[in-house]
Amino acid sequence: MPYETNSDLPPSVQHALPRHAQDIYREEFNHAFKAHAGDPRQEEAAHRIAWAAVKRSYVKIGDTWTSR
Image 1 (cartoon, one colour):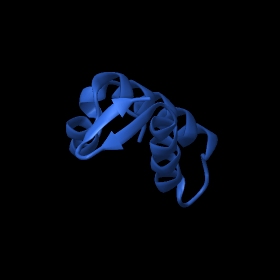
Image 2 (image 1 turned 90 degrees about the vertical axis):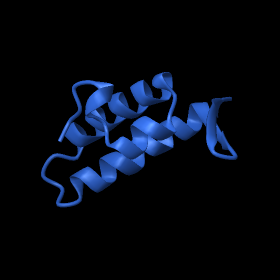
Image 3 (image 1 turned 180 degrees about the vertical axis):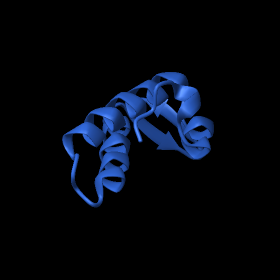
């Protein structure tokens, strides 16, 4: 299911990522979700793609995600 706002994201994403990273995650998830329509693993693929997009701009140091 696509996310309209960052407050709709899973709690694990909201609590782990800074706001800008949440924006990236949400936008990439929504794009991937639409692109994989009809795939039985649509949501799983969209989550993987969204995390990959976040990791291109952010790195996790300890428990904190910081921009590269």
